[in-house]
Length: 205
Image (cartoon, rainbow, N blue to C red; front, side, top):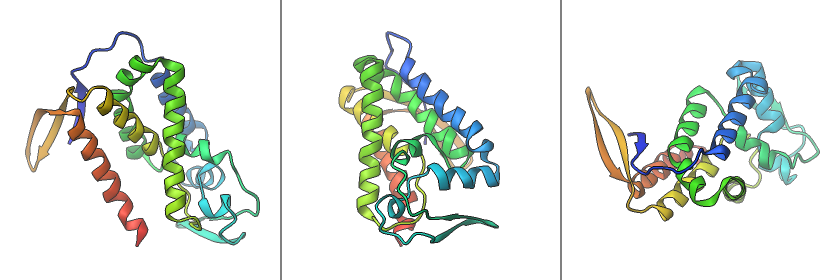
């Protein structure tokens, strides 16, 4: 399923949402080299959230392979900025585009209700809460964590809470058959968390 748009009009331009999307794109271009191997790996090592490095629960000097000829070496010092910076980095084009599209579809109405300043604060708090949950699940992990999924999950939860009756026009692929249906916001929220869970389970093995 892929959300096309919601049926919930907005009253003002979503300044905060646009600025967050702009920062994510800028980070992808300037810090991650549009996903080029060396630049992407360097950004994950320098600005990704690594629980074991942050909490000193993984041994300094540990080498974490990221691909052919690419690896992170854990530093002896903590990088607390990574608690924020990891939210603006991504692991690939699909990761970036998917996250930003979900933010665009659902974020404008939440910002409409909160205002730009409160939305920014809410977005960052959701991202920090998700990061905290990830750290608690594996505090000694040496694998860099990046992405806006935690913050956007919080935005979608806020949307479902504020507009439980809103409906989302959704593109559905059933093999070679493609159609659109209107589903409740709570259904899209459940689908979002399902795909996040499905993509995260392999990392727990």
